[in-house]
Length: 474
Image (cartoon, rainbow, N blue to C red):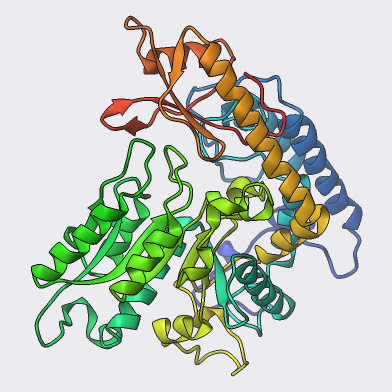
């Protein structure tokens, strides 16, 4: 009798037919050591290339969402051949996806990805290295380290800067606030949010009322509480009122609170406004606050000699959030947190990986994430492919398209500008009292004209266009 696993009866032993099914499934998913199924895997890869090019990229004329009906999962006991699966993806999945490749899509900060970053994502998945440690991702650990230093210097930091790639700008902002809290009250690393100084004074952070909701999340996550997040008023464009900022700080101090963090925005989510970074930096320095810049969107302007003046003062920050997955057209996910001093990352986390070799650099000690993808590869490939001048030209192109779009709005009898744009984000509203912005938006979507988002600004529903598509039309 053959050897049986514990608690396994002969009736539970897979029959020959089941073994053949398993072997067939394995051949379709894993390369065999004798390489007999190499052509099968290659055929699958080529089929995916055709599906992406023909079914996704070459769909600029297709509607924004072709099929809004529910999807049937269809998961059964037996597997499905990959050719049938790809036919199902083409007929059932792709028509239900939001088509960002339609040049009329300009609703959110969603860019069409650079082709090289699409294929790089497939390569990243195949390598499947883990950015937890140098041991698990040797070349990519050093590639990421070089990239964050390169970007840090691009924003004006010196050679002591560092950073880490993150799964989105929200996580970068949360990490920045955590580093700031631990910098000003290191005992919270051990005693948690219950720690208070001898005067029992709470920490308070200050941002503009146009800042991203990730700061609200951050105050919750790090244990300080949203009640201690002070939102400073902004002007009609969404730029922070610097006088109100200082008044808010003084009021907080007078009531026994400790201002420790000030966040400025370079490219607000709704209007694309950029705060007066040097002025905010001066106030942060005056009151000994950590100065953070959320440049998740607007940071890409640093590549353009014509527009980088908008980021003057970025070198004064203690930390910067930047997302190449937005205005650099790199496929998601690709975001980063940069810090002026590498020691802030080490001190802020005070972590150690006892199950890894004691190498000089383990990113798992410096981030909130453990397992991370090797997004450094596609970012590096994008930079090498276009060069800094290529990105400068793309940024300038976006800004010229924005100017053309504003001219179209000003000539329109349906809409008007809410405010003059700072970046390539344009806010507008319906001027017809019988047709509100939401109705007009749906009319445009139904006609296949343009797809805009519908944010709330100053209590009103308005329309927002983000001019990211290189061939945008309206």
